[in-house]
Length: 94
Length: 149
Image (cartoon, rainbow over all chains, first blue to last red; front, top):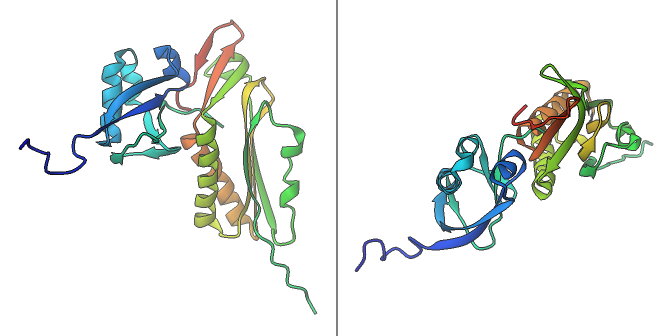
């Protein structure tokens, strides 16, 4: 028996589309990424994974916030196929 | 005998394509007998930023989230300042020129303290949270994203 297999859902992954905006999107030359992430993760882990995947914007990722389903998130997260994930670089509205 | 008129607070928020039109600059919809005070804030595109002359701006927006954030900010302001607060917030996106109005916030309350407080809270929280980004174009032809302001 593999370690962890006793707990259902542990180690499961999900494929999500991550949206990029403004200076972040411009730096990467991309409006989004489609990546596989653990279902059970944290906002901080998602940002770290993305900054490793796209080191060209590593510094900007450290100053960005994660949003899931149109709201900012921090800490533990449950992602599904339907989650709308977005990286929000420092905003400048108003 | 007096009639009792119970009117629900007005709660309106929108993202508008382009500079805000004259119709949303005045708090006409909030002029009601239950609001003894109406406070307004207009954000105007400046012709200079950090010592540079600005010729135009472009606002990019993550629209569905921006709309959701505006609704949440209105609920937060009502909870903190006055449950009977009326609020209208409209934010413009896209191309703008100096002098254009980019955001209009109107707040109506029974008394001035709650109206001023909620209006200030709404613009400060909007600037922290609304997923809108400003790209400035300067008179020398160069451009830059503003990252936090």
